[in-house]
Image (cartoon, rainbow, N blue to C red; front, side):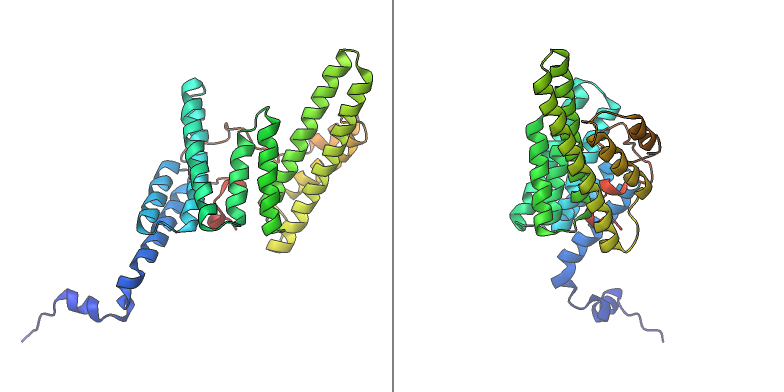
Length: 284
């Protein structure tokens, strides 16, 4: 005679489910995070966002999902502006960036010195800096704080370099305008300031390459581009920020590395999100 054993008894007796009630919350949070990462990697940021929210509903102190939400909201915001490059799209983008900042601050509430959280907040200010030197300085402050907690934080070093570069570009532009007004001495000061920023940018780029190799045991992505950036910046620094013929030669060899604030590179449903745009747990 065949005996029917209820499936619930089999499950209850299985060692796989031992302690399930105690660990279910954390396991479910991690599971939703993994699902979100899959969607994120494929450029499906709305679905990723939804999974990260579900993860936090299971465990509202799960820092990896908070961090991932910063990145998901950021990419959602960029995508909104790509879809509607007007005032309406800009408002939607700003709303997503405010949500991203909320999650970044939540990370720091949970863990004050979280280097990835500090970097993520810096990234939001960097994206939003535009012509605002105050926001660029705030971004730089967060990147510096991330590096204080983790000197080998490769992406904080990466964006720190771009902050220096953009500050140099601004100083160069101010110098050119002063020169047009006949204020030669003041213009020279701005050109000298531009040179100093370009040297700092080149040094930070060198640090990024060195940190990447030490941390990952391999060359950084787009290393050839970075080497050309370093050479170009040093060349321009020696000429008060001017793009010399030699600097242009180095610049023409650069294929992909750029300051990265453009939203036009963001596409929905496209595989291969740039590594600097990936949440910490998804990076190599």
